[in-house]
Length: 373
Length: 239
Image (tube, rainbow over all chains, first blue to last red; front, side, top):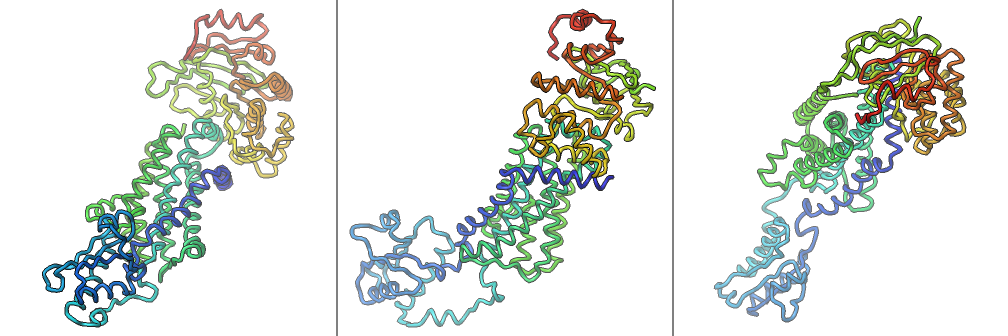
């Protein structure tokens, strides 16, 4: 009788959940859309600066000396630079402000004599990494001209070689966004979970349930298991979308790493943490409106802190430390260990322990606070 | 044997200084249809919730066919239609019946056969597969009753079963209850509609402020509404 009751409790919960279109959109389509657009938006973060994208550059040659002309020529025909002719009557500020170019290189009068350095004026919105790469390039070309060397770039390139694993040259944004938004969506389960619980309390169906010989532990399991299963489905779907779908629309690839089976324990624990969060919100909320606000705000805050929206790697040191208070950080890092770093299970385990603790605390607090009727 | 024996129940909700029920006693003879009347705040719904095991922590004793509540087996001899329409509105009538049938421990085949019976009794057979949210208020009320009847209870507890329904649905519910009572089902009917109580019930318990103020045969009362107002007063009860 107990298993049959549990089966029907789960079936009922899934039927209600799957018939709610808004919930399906929230849990399954929102993360797919976020993965798609955020991957495009974050493309530049892991891009090999300059080699993947030419910089639009204006050269203002005020010297017109032979070396200055040579420098202008070298910049103009460099394979990593998209030369833009200098617009008439516009100074560097205007050129940048009007979006004509991303940088203006000025070769001043007196450059030949070594009195004045070459000046670079960058678009202030430009990514710091991109700016450093461009500055190095112009420095290198200028050194060639000043020192009279023809192949400095080639010589320098041979001195230091970047060694990487096969297919691991640079992570694609999908490596960040697929696990990130899968976790994010999993925590959003707290919204339908808490609303459903409070609605049942309000309409009396939960009270009616207890007029039958049903154990409260069974009802608890009947509430948790369906959302846990939805969590697992969300993650599976996001992985499939990452590997097979999104890479066809945007020319980015997603690799699951050398130990993809490590995703199983990580997903089991992340789903437990997400459902734990959902149970806690359901128990603490007094009205569906209150609980949905609590769930959404909580999930977004955890996402912002945990490196879901802004990659942890690009955060300043203080934020990197603060990130550790978010359970999403630990889950995300565990997934990044798998898809980026090919880490051993031993390296992932501490993150799993933190997530399990978070889930345990949520369930314990919820268990103490719950009021069924 | 009485279907229901309630002895000296005293109960108050957490944080409330006033008792919801105080030394409340009531008996319902097997096979009878008995009315439970009282103004707002009399404790009728609280009593129903205590009988059905939803509320604990009371003093006194509740016996259902001799079984002391809360008792799993005794719970199954009770059918309860709460005052709020307590159904899953995105599920169909059949899905609701299947769910509550499983909670009552009915085997699948019995759920199917009993669902047909109760849907027929409540006039909802044609809408069995439609979602409850598409039902009118009267249809939802009837399904609320159908769920209570599904596991063939011996004692039916009804908390204002005709609130907000049209005369046709109300009449259908009255006819169903009369048939069920004639077939031997014991019914405790909590209502605010005096005509309903007088038309259907053979005995009456009148409660006010958590205590029983009258208990007797309906035949002793000529005009129930007048009697009710005499006993409970004409002042407004907004509790």
